[in-house]
Length: 302
Image 1 (cartoon, rainbow, N blue to C red):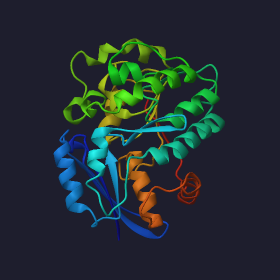
Image 2: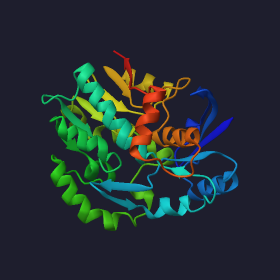
Image 3: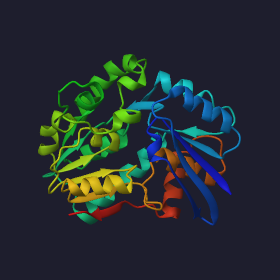
Image 4: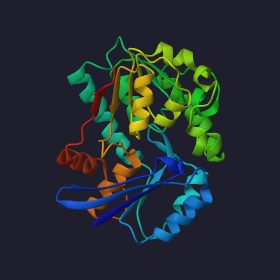
């Protein structure tokens, strides 16, 4: 049996393990949260290195991308260096194929992401393929990187401006402690008052896209008539979204026994199935996705 393990900076309360069959191969998939503890991440990866077929790096990005440029984040690099024998991926290779294709399918078959749709993409630099696709589909978009990552309440309204800002900022931002850029451990959870902080951006949008932990941390109480496109959603998350009045929840990764895993897990799965030791090429991802028939999961909640 193949074994895929996602070691996450996120909460251990969201741990999950399933066994499934893909393309005739049985695979154990496990998510292990470390509650924001980088040293624990390193320890687990070091202990399991060579014992599993592929690692997913959860709750943090190895790279942030803008156009053809990728910038490796310092803290993530330190974690990845603990892995000497087993391939480790953060999902960025798969996002570029999977999420572009998902948006195209949703546009063609479900009439989403049209020119009249207003879209909030909470973080574009960890999903640049999605950002580019939204621009191509001519939706009206707010790219929320300054807002949700750095706490600067400035909307970026065009891909061109996003690229200009990112090329200036990323050579510096990549050296910052990851905890300053991304909610980890218990900080990913909603707190009293946080649901009002960026409420105007949620109210403006028809469709809210991107990393679920960013979305959830500042989630307002009223989501009536809105659609969320994301992943890493649990059954408890679904219930909370339903209680907020969310119309429709779409996950770009398939649900496995009640849980939509992150793209880092799915990318690690594809590498394990392929039997390789490194990231696959874009066309290899696309071919495997077609064989596995991975399509967006759509749930009407209200």
